[in-house]
Length: 365
Image (cartoon, rainbow, N blue to C red; front, side, top):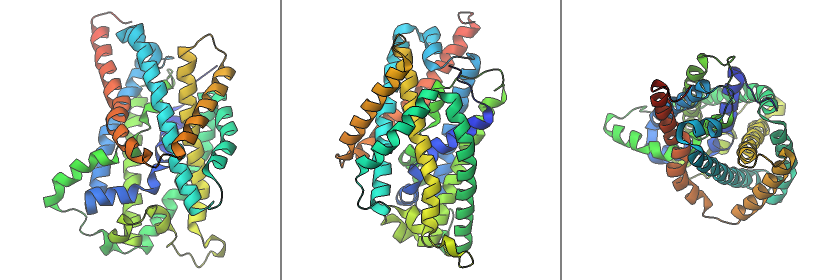
């Protein structure tokens, strides 16, 4: 199966994957931990994760046509390669469960009040599974359509929020005495930047070229700026006090948007979340695909269709289990700081350094 993407598709995959669910509570997280300087925290974090994305893209360029599981065996040996394969497989399983829990909470608490979360999950599973079965190339084509619609809609709504909000709610933009707090809060906004690790199972070709690492970095920086826009526009609409005491501050802020000249758009939150479903679909699909891709390499003799079905069953059962665990969100916050950072930054950086050393020594072609 051909698994290639263009740099434009890479941009949209990263954007939809990273913004699929996390932005709903991002204003509250940023406000609680960084106050009015949350935008500084987000941009600083985006630079670090942007460098990590650039490193993963550089690794993929060094070993064109291969993914992390393939080229890691050349760098650190087959045993460590299989260990990394299992690590990422379990990592994406847990991440899938987090996406499910977050999605379920948002939908059942704000829109489908009488619909059980498991029913929403069950309806979506065949679509996620089909997308995973078709592979990276086909998902990337879907993302091209979804991505453009989501970006245009989201940016437009948040710009309107900036125009209708109260500028005094976000002033002063920077308090020098709180600089330390802004940077210490970076650990609290790691989850919104997890997603760059999807690049570890997407092979690059010559078509991606030397621009791919730079494109990956600029994409993550752009996502950081988008997050800052989301946070600042939400605070302008609601005020800092209401933001920190609201479980879904983004939805509450969007509900304050008033467009009297467009009668059929009286509920902007419905429009935003309808388009946002695309991001949720994208996030679940790409994580499902990650699980399938690593499982296919760990069990090469098993047919892809069998792995897709088995992965779907495992994802569904784990998601059902997580839905009944109220403390899972707190667990995932700790999980993201350590395991998420290892998956997105530490492991790719170590592999990159070792690959460079071995290439210079002539041990890798």
